[in-house]
Amino acid sequence: MESPKSKLPNDSERIGNGTSNLNVIGVGSGCGDIDLKILSALHHKYPEMTVDNEVIEPNPQQLRDYRDLVSQTPGLDYVTFIWNEMTAEEFEEQWKENKRTKKADLIHMFQMMYFVKDPEATVSFFQSLLNKNGRLLITLYSGNIGWVKMLDAFSNQLGTAELNRSTDDIKRFLDSKGVRYQSHNLPAKVDITKCFIEGDEDGELMLDFLTQVLHFSKTASPELKAKILEFLHCPEVSVESNGKVLMNADSELIVLEQLT
Ligand SMILES: C[S@@+](CC[C@H](N)C(=O)[O-])C[C@H]1O[C@@H](n2cnc3c(N)ncnc32)[C@H](O)[C@@H]1O
Image 1 (cartoon, helix red, strand yellow):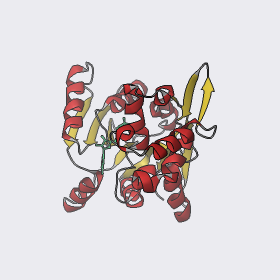
Image 2: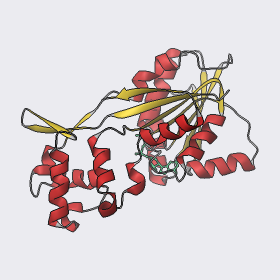
Image 3: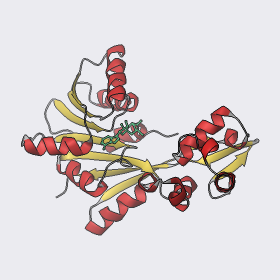
Image 4: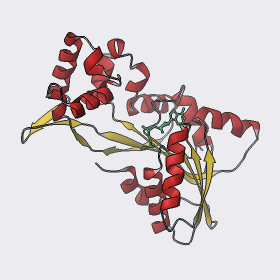
């Protein structure tokens, strides 16, 4: 799978404000593995720059894992980490309460926009924090992949209404407000063969993830399970290659600049 990082160096060609420091904000950073790749790509491109890296992550365990990862990773002395154990919405509230004015050169929101209450408001707030030449990077699953269509088609039975958000939803409100953006496809395939092997433990875990329902195989009606498996196997969702069922899991990267 192509990572957002591989798009970063070219896209970030002009970031920075002429100072020797970059301000980065990671929103919904999880355990930080992708964030550290981003920091490393930035360091590679701007070896002379220091980085203030503000982390926004509401899950305490994920934040602990991120801090552990930082302490185990050598060579991060160019980064100052600022930890915010909170949601993007709480961060926005605190930012406004404290009348903060710091501007950011790079803000990234990878695979987290599914979980915010009001994506339009969140994008608009974080875009307002961008420096001149700053970039806001957003990734979500691409709206045209079959898996998103499946979540959409079965949202009533699965209760996945907010999780079937895709980049289409983001682009819709950006287009309606006339906000300019670039987008790049990040191709990915996931091997879902085990989902079709009755009783396979890995397959059942994968089905939990794909349906966003815990213990789906044990709790769903046989009819629903059959329909979902049929959907996952159709050409719109997956292809068969060398006896494997490979699901299209493309994401899309949306790049926003400072509003002018
Ligand atoms: C699918 S993970 C993505 C983690 C990481 N960015 C990545 O791409 O690997 C989504 C993350 O968003 C966090 N999250 C959930 N709701 C959020 C919110 N309202 N604001 C900020 N982060 C949130 C979760 O705790 C989780 O760590």
